[in-house]
Each structure stands twice: as C-alpha cells, then as structure tokens.
Image (cartoon, rainbow, N blue to C red; front, side, top):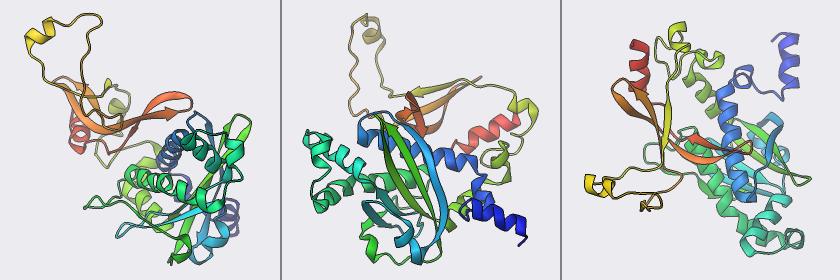
Length: 293
C-alpha cells in the first residue's frame, strides 16, 4: 500500500474509497435514518454526518459509544449489527410516549429508557435492512439481542449522525457489517458511482437517455368505482380509503402506453419537506424498456 493511499484511508477512518465514493449508499443511509429520527423526535430536524470509520468487530464495544446500544442478528444477510442512541433522543422519545416534559425524563432510570427504546431501535434496523433490500427470501427482519452477547467476525462500518433541533444536537449511530456494505457497492456496479447505468441495464448511460425526462406520480391507493358513483362526486365528497397506509405508496411513470408501476415507496420527511423514500429497486423491465427505446 502506498503512503498516499494509507494517509487517505487514515483520514477517512479506514473506510474503503469504494464505499466513500458510493453516493447512492450514503444518500439512502442518511434518508432512512433521517426519516426514522424525525418520527422519533416528532419534529423535522436537519441531519448531518458526524463521523464514519471502520472498527474491528472485536473492538466494537469500545468504538460504538452512546447511552443506549442495541445489538441485532440477521442470518444469512447480516447488515445492521448495532444501533446507538444518545440520552437526548431517549428523553425526547419517552416524553412523547408518556406526555411529559423531556427535561424531567432525562434523569429517568436507565433501564426504563433502555426497555422503552428497544422497539424503536429495532424499527430502525428493519428500516435500514428494507432500504438496502437485505431482508432475505423469507422476509425476516433482524432479531434483537443484547449488545454484549454479540460475537462479530470481520470489520464494521460505524457511522454517527447529528440532528440539530431547538438548539440541541441529537446523536444516532449505526454499526453495519463492512462486508455487507461492500457487497452493496459491488452489486451496484462501477457506473452507480458516477451516475451512469442504474441496476445494470445497458444503454441507460447513453446521452440520449440521460437527457430525456419522464413524469413520475406517487399513488397512495387505487380503488374501483362505477361510472354512476363518479358522476355523483362533487366538491366536499369523501372517498374512503380502507386499509391505506403511507408506507405503501406506488411510484408510477408515464409512458406512451400509459402509467406503469415502477417501484414501491413510503411517505416521509427530507430536509424539512415532504418526500417519498423508495422501498424497492426500480423495476428492471422498465429500465430495459427505456434503454431500448
């Protein structure tokens, strides 16, 4: 290894350059954590990266700091190893749950806050696993376990974010298996780092495709209705949407043959604005059709 490369790795916490340059990965990671944290805090804060480094699994207990640390196991696709939550997040979350002042709960018994936070910490691990499509064939989510009982082989990518809100900096950290992150980078292909072909569909990097545009719609729900019922609709009419949930949105693209469903998404918040986070990859059939057009 050259001295120049060694210096670069040390300045980036030992994170491999290929991972550092994988912008889609970092955007998806920040988006998922931001949506989760805004939900926990019940407010929209600005998320910013604090640190990222590689930690040996055996030393993770020393490198992953925080008031509350939760461990996870997920076979065979192990991605999320642990989640770290600071005391400010814990107090704010407990205050929301118990309808009390957060300053009073900051000194609450640690075991109480630890148990109260466990379900939402597990939700974050599930959100990240879903975001990167690593639930596995059976759709099983990561299982909670005590952090002290984890036996971690290989290295982990430890990432910390800060959320600035009302003059306070709330901190959230995640530990991901580095091998899993590298596999995500490799499966994306070299073109994903430079904004080229998506999902490996050939032809998408050509200028004629890159410079074209497509109209996207996000659909909350669809339901059948008779023509007679449609004719009775007027301003103020209420259309019931039974079973509809904001985490089950459909992203459609307008084509010459009409709208086509291309992905699934969920409603969230991104940089103080409403946004939709994709929960699935773009339909490969749609990408191939675009490239062939």
